[in-house]
Amino acid sequence: MWTIHLVRCRNIAVHGVRVSNNRQLPNTDGIVIDSCSDVTIAGAVIRTADDGICLKTSFSEKEIGRCERITVSDSVIESKSCALKIGTESFGDITEVSFLRCRIENSNRGLGIFSRDGGKVENVVFRDIEVDCSETPDGFWGSGEPFTITKLTRRPERPAGTVCKVLVENISGRCQGAVNLFAEEPGGIDNVVLRASTLRMEEGPLGTARQYDLRPTNADLAPPKGTEGRGNAWVRAEDGNIVGLFAYPGGLPGVFAQNVTGLEIENVTIDRPRPLPAGWNSATITLVP
Image (cartoon, rainbow, N blue to C red; front, side, top):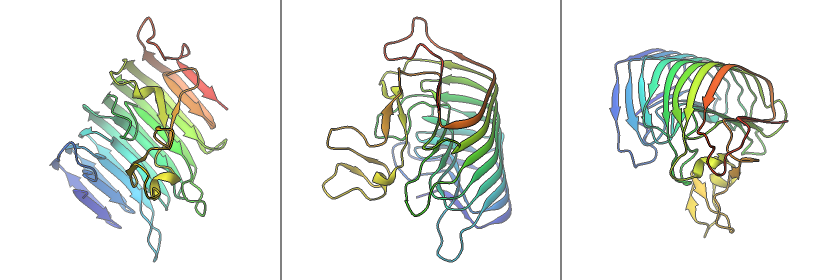
């Protein structure tokens, strides 16, 4: 299970922690910050198969907590899931979060926000971060995205909370997947700024980056008996495809945004191969209202 799990803690400082887990086992998150406030993590080196550093607000029958005033800085992360992540458990609000001066190595997803369970996510900064993101097989969540936000309801009784006021600035490095921003309704993601960043986008060996990934979905909570898959991970539909994976319209772009309002893209360069590989979109940026 998770290596370091901070639950409902206050005024915590974590410095110089090193975590090295098996790169093939699930649920091996490095550090999980769950419903905490006033937490700083600095100088960590985390290498794991699951999420590197993850913020969440898990469900509690007594009281749903908040996660606020969290700073992660000057750390090195390697993850086969998402290196620096908010969600997916998001029952309470998550706000005032900063990820600063980090390096992401040999990872699947780099930076991610996943709203699923009713809490809002707002006032988040990712700044001065190097990424190195590569494709993974379709059983893994995501495939080579440097940055992703998805807002999707998985429990009808708890509509997913909005994601707003997110700044992504001075991000550099290489990736094999697109920047992916998806909300299931207009305005579910609002006021996102992508600024002063340079990414080198490469063709991956698997082709899995040509799909955008909305997992976890409602189907992942409790797969029906006889269904191929693993709970809270992946489910294969009758047609043989993984539930929650969708082909990008028109092919793989550099940036994909659907139902995002207030999106600003300033001085962002995505260097893509020439000629474009098969299955890639001729447009670097694809906006779907």
